Amino acid sequence: MAKRINRAIELLEAGQAIYYAGHHTGHVLTETQGRADAVTWADYINIGMEHGAFDMAGLAAYMAGLVAGGPTRSGHRTPAVVVEAPVNGIDAAHVRHCAWQFRQILGRGVHGVLLCQAETPEAARAFVEACRYPHRAAGLDPSLPSPLARAEGAASLAPGPGFLGRGTRGRGSEATAAPIWGVSEADYFSRCDPWPLNPAGELLLGVKIESPEGVARCEEILAVPGLGFAEMGPGDLTLSLLGETALHLDPYPPAIAAARARVFAACRANGLAFLEACTPANITARLDEGVRVIAGGREDTARIGRAHQRRAVPA
Image (cartoon, rainbow, N blue to C red):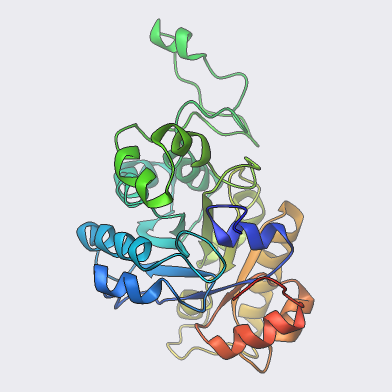
C-alpha cells in the first residue's frame, strides 16, 4: 500500500532514485492519454510547459484521466506529475509577476513544479513562496510581521538569508486539486507543502541551473528552503558557455563538466536530489555517484537502475 500521495517523494525518502517519463514539449494532454499513462513504468511524469503549450484545460483533463485509469501498480492513486513551468527564474520580480502560472498549474492537482533558468536565490525564494499557502510556518522568517500586525498596517519586510517569506498561493483551487489527490480540501491544505522542508509535505519543487549566472550563484540558490531537487541544464549551458548547438552528454565537455560538479556539490551540501539524464550504459555509475532523479525516459535504464539499488516496491 502507498505510504504517500506523491510516489516520487516516497521513493526519495527511502533512498531510491526516481525515473521519469516525458519531455520538454509535445505532450498530448487529454483524458484518454491520462488513462493510458496511469500505468506508466515511470515513477513520475514530467509535463514540459517550458516549451510546450500552457494548456490548463488539457492538464485538468489529463489529471482526471490518470485518476480514472489508476491506481498505479504501486498502489498510488496516480503517478506523480511534475510540470516544467514557462517561467524563467532570473530574478524575484520576474517570478512574482508570473506567479499566477504556478497557481494555475497547482490548481489542476499536480504534485510538483520545476522552475527553469534559476539565476538568483531571490528568484528561487519567490518561487517557493508562490507555491505555498500563507498559513504554513516551516522555514518562515520569524522576524516578519505577524498576520495581525500586517493587517494593522505594518510594513512588509523581505525575509532574511536562509528564510522564506510568507506563502502567496491563495485559496480557491483546493476544490479542483483535492479530488485529484483523493483527499478532503482541509487535508489538501495540510499536505500541499514543499518536501523536505515540511516532512509531511507532498509537493516536490525543483530548479534548473542552466545559465552561467545560475551556476555562479548555485550554492546560494540551492540553499533556499523548500526545494527538493535540482538539475544542471546541459543543453542551455552548451549554448551559452560553448556557443554550440550540438549536445554532448557523456562525456561532457570540460566547461559543462565543471558546471555539473559545482551544481552537484551544492545539491549534496543542501540535501537536494540531483537530476541528470542517464542511459543503460551509465546508470549504475551515476547511481553510485549519488544521482537520484533520472531523466532520459527509457524503461530499460530504470530496470537496470532499480535492480542495482535492489528496489523492492513494485514498478
